[in-house]
Image (tube, rainbow, N blue to C red; front, side):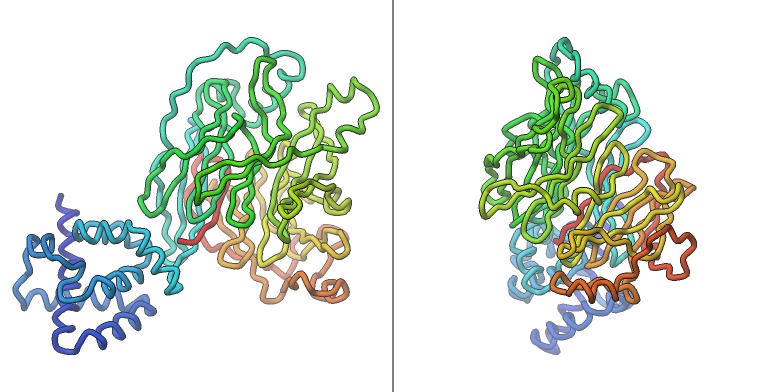
Length: 497
C-alpha cells in the first residue's frame, strides 16, 4: 500500500506543478516545453526533482480531487493530455496507471497507442522465451531505452482431458522419442503445458500456438497484449499441432507443418493456415507439397523417412520454408518450398538457398530478415564460435561475413537470432549461463540492399573460405545481459508498441 501511494503521489505532485506553470505561461507554451523535455532523458528526472522541492512550499492537492477530476490533467483538454501521456516511455506505464483510474483507462486505451504511432513514439522491445529446469516457460521483455528487463505474466494454465496413449507404434514412436529428446525429459510431453508450442508476433501482440499437454497436441492459441499486460485466448487453429513453424507476411500470422497426434500416434503435418489478427479468423492455406519427399526410390524409404518443416522466414514478400526428411536422430536436407501469397501456391525453393541453409540442433534452421537481407547463423565451424551467413538472391548463394561470434555450445539451444532496432542480433548464453544479447556493428561491414549488384556485394562483404578464428574485425558488442541460471533459450520475438 505504501508503494502504491508513493508512486501515485510522486506522479501527482509532478503534474500539479506542471499545471500551475500552465496557468501562468499558457497551454501552448506548456506543450512546447513538455514535448522538448520528452526528447531529453535527463529532463524527466529534473521535472520530478523540481516538483519535490516545490511541493514542500505549496499545499498538496488531495487524492480525492485527482480521482474525481473530470479531466485526465486538470485544466487541460483530454486531447492534449492523451498526447502528453503518449510520450511517456513504456517502461513507466505501470507506475502511470497508479496515478488515477482515468490515467489507467487512458494508458490501456487503443487511442493512446494510435497516438503514439502517429507521433512516432512507439518503442521496439525484445521478447525472450526461456524454459527452466522445471520445464516452466517464462517470458521476459527487454527495453533498449532504459536497458531494463521485465518479466511478463505467466502463460495461463491449461485443462486438457486425458486421452489414451495407445497406438504409438512404428514411425510414430520414433517421432515421439525425437520430440522427447528435444525436450531432454521423457515425461515432458505429459507434464508441461505449451510443450512444443510455436510463437509469433503480429500487430503488436505475442502469440503462443498449439503445443503438447498430457501427450495431446492442442489447437489453442493464446495472445499476450502488452497494452493490458495479460494473456487471453483467441480463435483456435483448425488442426491440433506442435512444433510448427510461424512467419508473418502482410500483417498476417502463418503456421505450417509440425506434428499432431491421432489414433495412429504422432504424425508429421504438411498443412498450413493463416490468422488475421484484425478479424480473429483462421483461413486455410494450400498444404506444402513436399515434392522431393515424393521422389524417394522405394516404399521402405518413404515409410522410414518422414518429411518435416525445419524453419520458416518471411523474405522478399514470400514465405520460405526449409524442409528435411528425418528418421531420428538423422536429418536429411531436401531443400525447401516457397509460398507466394499472390498466387496462393507453393514452388520449389532455389537450390542454392536450400542446400546452403545452416542447420542447428535437430535439423532446425533459424534465420532472420533485417533491412531486407536474409541472415542465418552457422554454428558448425568450431565448438566455441560461429559465423553469420547472408543470402545473395541474385547468385543463389550464402556468403559468410567476416567476424566470429562467441557461442557457448553447451546447451540444447545455444543461440537465437533477431532483427532488433534495424540491426542483426544474436542471443546466446556465456560460460556462466548469463543470457547475452549481442548486436552486429555494421559500420565497417555494411550489407547492401537487395538491389545491389553481385559485383558490389563481393566488395562490401568479405567472404571467408576457411574459418578465421580470433578475427581482428570484431563486429559484435554485448548490448544486454541478464542472469539466465539454468534456463534454456526457446524463442524470441520483436514488435513495436
